[in-house]
Length: 151
Image 1 (cartoon, helix red, strand yellow):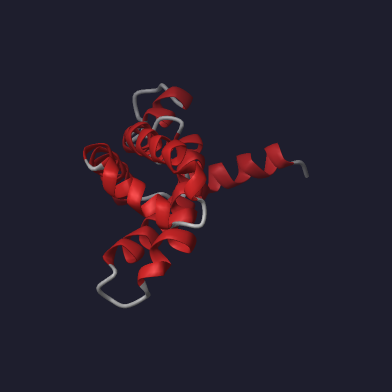
Image 2 (cartoon, rainbow, N blue to C red):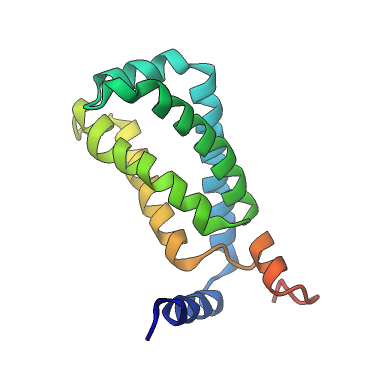
């Protein structure tokens, strides 16, 4: 089978096994990412300090702008359920970097909430990359413009 057929099968299966409460979880994830984007914009100096301590200090300014923009725009798209998988793909490098390069420097103890929240967000992003945006999404409205989109 080719990749397009496999993706269609996965998407069909995910659509039939996607309870509505997962849509609210996706919306919450998108809102959380948007809030993080606003926090990065408000306190860019802290983000620059984090990036300077990372293994890639020479590209910290570009990364800071990418992180803020990707969280703001990507979070909005994820919350609305519009091109959700594409928005998630732009989030994945940020969260992988946060989990494996930035936050482990502070340790794995329970008070390192940034590491744990990064791990949870990364797992949710991977989940929604596989399962898609769900019933309460603009993606679904575009694909199936009929009146029974809630059922």
